[in-house]
Image 1 (cartoon, each protein chain N blue to C red):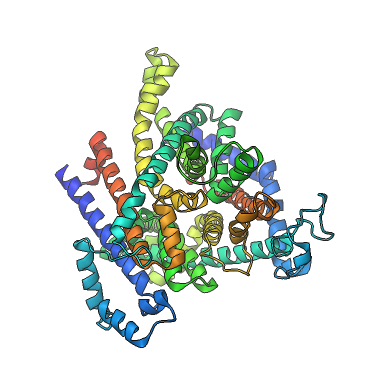
Image 2: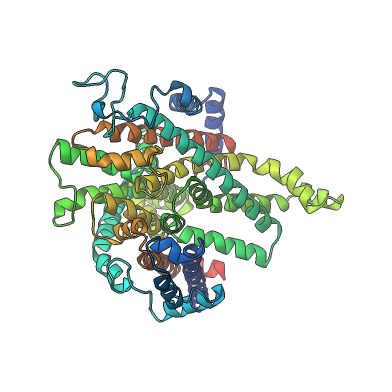
Amino acid sequence: MTDYLLRVVIKMAVTLFAIVTVTFVATRLSGNPIDTFLGEGLTDEGRDALIAYFQLDRSIWHQYVAYLRGVVSGEFGLSFIERRPVTQVVAARLWPSAQLLLASIGLTAAVSIPLGVLAALYRKSWIGSAVMVVAFSGYAVPNFVLAVVMILTFSYWLNWLPVVGNGTALHFIMPTIAMSGVLIAALTRFTRNAMLDVLGQDFIRTARAKGLPELAVVMRHGLGNAGVTVISVIGLQIASLAAAGSVVVETIFSWPGIGQLLVTAAIMRDYPVLQFGVIAVAVAVVLINAITDVAYALVDPRIRLARS
Amino acid sequence: MTGLADIVARHRRRRAGAAAGGDIIQRIALLLAVLLAAAAILTPLIAPFDPLDQSLISRLRPPAGFDRASPGHLFGTDELGRDVLSRALYGMRLTLTLAFVGALIGLCLGGTLGVIAGLRRGWLEDAIMALVDMQIAIPFTLVALLVLAVLGSNVTVLVLVLGVAGWEQYARIVRAEVRRLTGQPFIEAARAAGAGTVYIARRHLLPNVVSPLVVQFTLALSNIVILESTLSFLGLGVQPPQPSLGSMVGLGRDYMPTAPWIVLAPAALIVTLTFTVQILGDWLRDRADVRLQER
């Protein structure tokens, strides 16, 4: 187990290092970031002062090392627009994003797991096909289209639901559904396949042969075993998908979370916020992945033994 | 771990489906794909108006058949009096072009790295697969946001970003296929007969990885259409006044209460595109390989 933990930690460290490097390279791609971000209207002295301040006259390697040093000590700079540390700016957006994320994962699990089990059990009948069509649609409909159609229907036409903000429980309905579309598609497919794998195994036949009721066979022996795979998928794939989805959904519904912040920062060229926001989200995803890996290995000894 | 009986049954079904030219949904998808491709290629000929032509007296006119509809504007006009149908057609043309070029870039990049990882074991393979893992772990939309914000959005940057978006899938597929194939006797025989690595890659490996790559290419197309539309919707992809399906939905959002057609026409087209491409991709996957079916 120590071996396994060590490998997870090393993998995580390498990925984080790569993310930090990618964000550095991305902001230097266009040459001098001052020109990109501040544009015209800067006096020559002001420009020189800024270049000296950000050490842009030094070599790229010097800048990179200085940047890494800042990252390690938690110095990510000030927001160009809000004029306070980007860490504060991002931290203020954390809770609304987390709320929306948890609501979406809850909805996804509540819908996908039963649907996936149904699709596996009734694979050959119309029920299975119908479920897979629904799951399929989730992949094909982009979340912003889903959101826009919902807003038209439930806000402008029926006048049932509010469009912007996150004040009440009603505000959660449309953003949560818009986030969950793709997630439901992904998780339903995985649940179905995991169930099919398990249901085809010998111990299921044994359970049936010893006279267990079908419900116990499916729920305890089937879902009990497939559940481990399903939960790991939630951690590994859903986290990343949800992070991408929150960017769009939060923007549409003016949800005061990190996704909306990132889009605003991208449009306003507030690059310290953008840089730190991307790092923060990536760190969250990588952490969730690592925790899932470890949890998976704890539950299923085959994993940690097979890989060593 | 599907049972052998399952695989045989599926194989038979697949044969039956292939012989009949697919089921009804797949045939509709094929027909739609031909129509959409033709519409994209012939856009300059069939679009009724110039997509950038403004006409302030016929602003925000509803589609044909509604009150106040303006003659000739089948899907109505937008806030500047531009024809929604023409803009949607030009938008689709641009979206499809970007998606094709992007998917090709991903194919070349991922395919090359996949072949290298499959043929050369050791640190090079480890490094490439570590890159693949990273690409999977990092939400790519965020990196795209960062790059587009820094470089500014133009078509070249956008198409490169879209190309990098899906390379890791190709790399994984190609590497797995190459590793499976290199273990087989005919490769060993070729090597024993004195064939070089490049020759083996071209003559023996390439023909065998074509079909999974075609499948992946098709599925990637639909993903790239969604990514491009999303970025353009957010205002970071195709820039106005050039129309793209995503930016039409994004900019039309402000007029939704009074003029929903500005948003609905491009949104419907996006969904039609992604559905069509995905159904075709799944169909190809079913036909291409039994082993790939369950994924």
